[in-house]
Length: 319
Image (cartoon, rainbow, N blue to C red; front, side, top):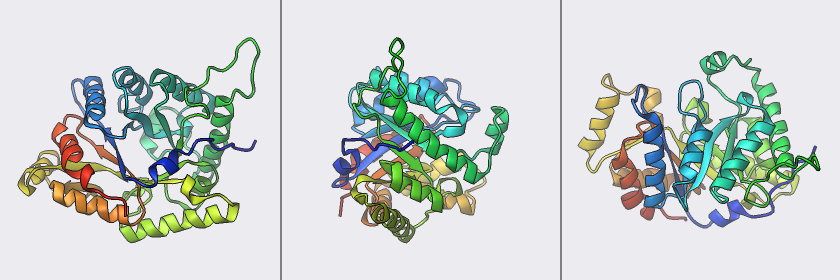
């Protein structure tokens, strides 16, 4: 089965500008996690974020597709997606159905992020066998093929046709990770890549790492004869905690990490004033990133959302 890439240029439309997506996650033990996610989604739309994302951790977090559907009917402009849906958790046909339904509810605003999964404990809790990395990567490739074929109505039943997504050629697909096989797959079939500094998001920690990773994708694109401009470079921030002052930002760290951040967490948490956040994102934009997925692991931290929208996003420029 050969994957057919979308006919519209979702990536090209964003290559000449910098856009931001917000991914809020309720704190463990939050009494009203669903309300927090939905309120954050509505606020993201009001603040003008390009996209609102949810992670896919059904063993311990609100179901991403249920909550994206709820946000879809309450918003008008913000794109809605997963960063990322874990392919082993559902059949590809089921995932195609979920994305198509939310695309219809949102009138064509879905972005489908896909990955191979990494949480060993979650696989066990879901009673799903965790295959080897190469096997999960092969399954990801098959899933992309199946999803796009399903959206296109193939195979089709005359009496029970597949109800398609709103976007004529289907939602754009982002593939997460920075491994050798993953980057090749991005070049072959994805509309966007996604990676970040944590081990689970690719270990891409510096602007130079970003340049090297994007150069690999560009090389694969040249080999297969695909314009690299069709692949949108996106970056993942594991947790942004912003404050109007350095003291205010550090107070959030003290609240969530009373024993302080580990070395690994210092690499993956953005703790900053708006000025510091602008410097951080601008350095990555200068290295080639065009879309930022900013996760906040406290869905009630509306101050961070508002500071991003008012004091950071307008100041990060496309080189």
